[in-house]
Length: 173
Image (tube, rainbow, N blue to C red):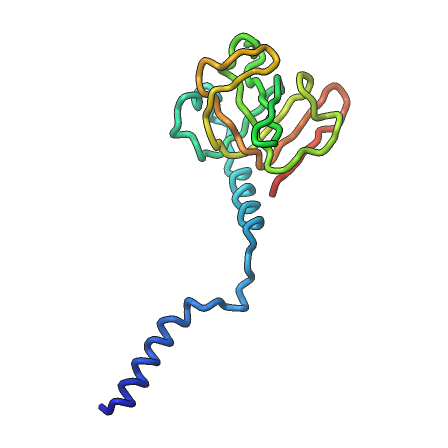
């Protein structure tokens, strides 16, 4: 085999090896926002309600799991310029004294200005993914939680302000 044929076949093999790495213009490009929205939609649809807040407290193996929880908003705070709401999932226990049933909700975007979104009078349903467990500080009663409590990134959230307002549902996907 001559040197030119060997060179030709070597270049052909190299070209065929790298050609799959080049971008195919027929495949649509997804932006980072689209990928994040898809992950939130998957976590909202994968959420189920068999995990309780007290099971997740102090148990890091639940981080990353999709959940569906409900409760009443008891206080809020601001972290990294984002408003977080905290809800009590067990109404028989007062959140001022015992925060073992409280979970936090982080919203990917700013919430709209709406009367149905308020502290102390709104019931909330949230579907999302547990992103962390941390000690909570109730800035209304100036108390800390005795355990680390779960923080959920909302993929879908419904605010219900009783008695007769229609619910407000916000989807982040």
